[in-house]
Length: 105
Image 1 (cartoon, rainbow, N blue to C red):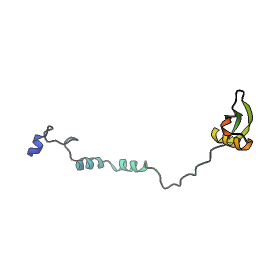
Image 2 (cartoon, rainbow, N blue to C red; image 1 turned 120 degrees about the vertical axis):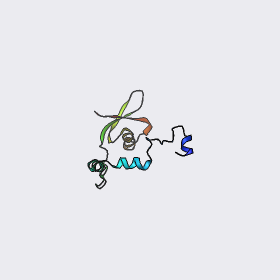
Image 3 (cartoon, rainbow, N blue to C red; image 1 turned 180 degrees about the vertical axis):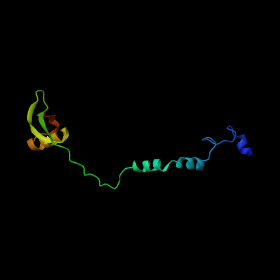
Image 4 (tube, rainbow, N blue to C red; image 1 turned 135 degrees about the vertical axis):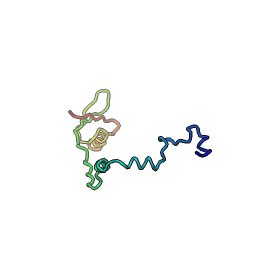
C-alpha cells in the first residue's frame, strides 16, 4: 500500500468493492450468451419503414355567434374547434372573434 492510499479515509480501497473499472466491466460482460442475445433482441427494429402520419379525422362542429343569446351561424367539418371557427368565419363572412364552435354529438 502506498503512502497516498494509506492516507485515504477508506484505507486505500476503491469504491465499488475495491475493484477497478476494467474489472467491473469484465464482470458485467461475463453474462451468459443467452442473456446477451436477449438484450439484442429487445433493441428497437430500425430497419422497418416509418409509417406516414394520418391526417386528423374531421368532426362536425356547430358554430354559434357569441352574444347574450347565442345564435347558430352554421355547421362546418374540421379537426378541432379553432379550425372550425376559422372555416366558419370564411364561409359565413363573420369575424372569427365573434364565433364559438361546439362539437356536434
